[in-house]
Length: 56
Image (cartoon, rainbow, N blue to C red; front, side, top):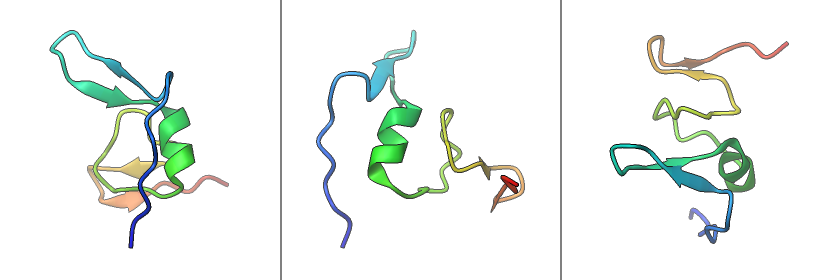
């Protein structure tokens, strides 16, 4: 079961279009990659190849 992470200040910002964009800080707190191609993904997921980029 996925745990619920409370959203705190600095976890997201609103884009000019009004969407909520989660920051790297939030993704790291969550602890896993959702594989959605997030703008600030610290895990290196590449939406085009559907794989995690090598971080070595």
